[in-house]
Length: 94
Picture 1 (tube, rainbow, N blue to C red):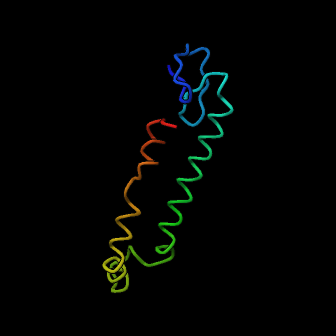
Picture 2 (spheres, rainbow, N blue to C red):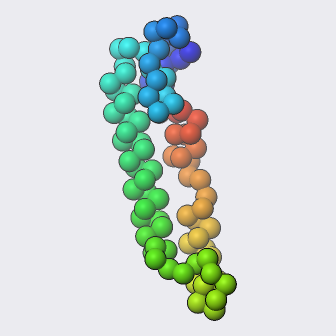
């Protein structure tokens, strides 16, 4: 196993894990802080991108839902794509 922060090889009995990120004992607090910051940034970015779509009828097949989906298809597509930040987080990259 490798520490997500310092990349030092560590024995599994000496490793710590937080939200899927592996850490050595020396860097555990820093890994927690970085993971929490990265996670909050992902949440904030997604919220800001999806804010215009909140509470709009996008799922129903009535005329309003269809018109909203057509008018906002670009925004819907952008919100549905995974960002580089999300990919790194999912891969365990700090």
